Structure formats: structure tokens, C-alpha cells
Length: 296
Ligand code: MN
Ligand code: MN
Image 1: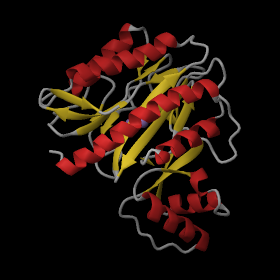
Image 2: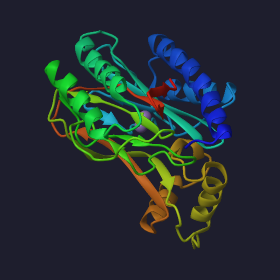
Image 3: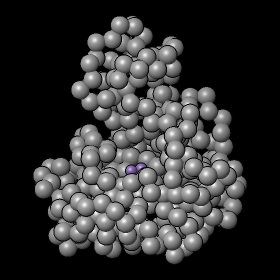
Image 4: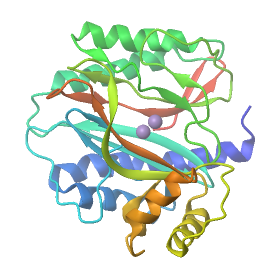
């Protein structure tokens, strides 16, 4: 069960997330630079009184998730690109995770609609007592009916304070066994693909987080400086390398801390098939007795 004051934090984050969703959808029509879009959304979240729960992800085409611009990024969303913009709004560690898809040329409208309809159909079956397998079944069925495939190894997830992926998964296919309880907080995020419906890790990595319970005794001074800043500002939430661009030799420190098991890396997740397209829709909700309180 959610405590009353936790619910208040979620509702506060919800009001901001709805504004940011509107802001983001308008922004991408005018601004195409990955870096500008990510920074504008992150700054707007702060301006509205929240914190970014993780770096804004902008993943295009066959890149399904976890692409975030680097400090010197010059990439632009092209007319034919299918972009997924994924952002999080956090109040006191209570995070809302949400995303939208955008394709300027509109040639992937059906693929985007497939993910959005899958999310709507998934939401229609959410209530306490329902098996997450029923949600995955709705998502898989809807996406297949559109003639696409769901991405089976990307999942929705439970959320807890300062914990974005809190242990329980909501699959995008018919599997799983967890029974939803009143007060559970979940993100549901269908991905529809024209490829294999499976993602692999790429080489590009811009997102990191502190491993819980890591031994923080670090020898290299630069690594120690980065670790102190991360621990102070981000607790266990993911961060972007560009947020610490003022630290000299940052990549070396990131690699050093990852090797020691102190940092976890989130490389870009790419469709197993080359030259394909992936769409995403995502919202966060609180499970209720007879339905759900949808937060975005
Ligand atoms: Mn998510
Ligand atoms: Mn997300």
C-alpha cells in the first residue's frame, strides 16, 4: 500500500510530467538537435519543481532505448527518423517514467499507433488481482494485429522510491506470474518493431548509475571526485556522462568505476535486425482496486 504522503509526491510529479509531455511534443516539432532537446526537457523539469529521474533518452529508428546525447553531440532528428523521447520526473525520489514516439515525415504512423494502442489496451485490464501475463497478452496481441512484433526483452517495471526498476517486470509478451496489488506503482512500456522483436546492447554508452551497496573505497583521485559528486547528487538514479562534463578525464573515471563494480552502465539497446524501426509508448500508474490511477 502507498502511504498518503508518498501519493502526494506522485501526484505532484504527475502534474509536472503531464506539462513536460506537452512541452516535449511541441519542442520536437521546432528543435531537432538531440542535445538541445534533452537539455531543454531536463531544464524544464527542474523549472517546474521536479528533478529528472534519469537522463532524457532520445533513441531513433532501430535504437530502441538508452541513447542519450553526449556533451558534444551534434546529431539531429531527420525527417524520416522515428524517435523515442523517454523522460522521468522525480519528487523526493518518487519517479514517473514516460515516453512518446515522433516521426516528422509521418511514414511510421501505424508503427507508433501500434505501441500507443497496445498501451491503451494494456491499461484497460489493469486492476488489483490481475496477473501481469494478462497485460503482456494484450500488448502482444495488439502489436501483432498491426502486423508488427513486440520487443520481448524490453519490459515495463515496478517503481519504488529512488528505484526505477524495482524488481517486478511487466512483459510486452504473454509471460510472467506476478499478481498486481493495490498501491503498486508500475511503468508499462510497449515497444513495437519492424525487426526481430529483440534488442542487443550496442557500444555507445552515455547513461550510468551507482551500484547499490558498492565498496566506495577508490584509489584514483579523479574517480573519487566523480564518485563523490554522483553519490551526492544522484543516489541510485541513472545519470548522463554529460552531467559531469566539467570533470577532466571523465571517460577514464567512468571506465575505472565500472571495472570496480561501483558503476553500472546502460549502453544503447539496438534491434537485433539491421535497418528496422521501433516505436514506444510509456506511462506510469498506481494500481487500484477496480482499475488504475494513470499518472501521465
Ligand atoms: Mn520505463
Ligand atoms: Mn522510460
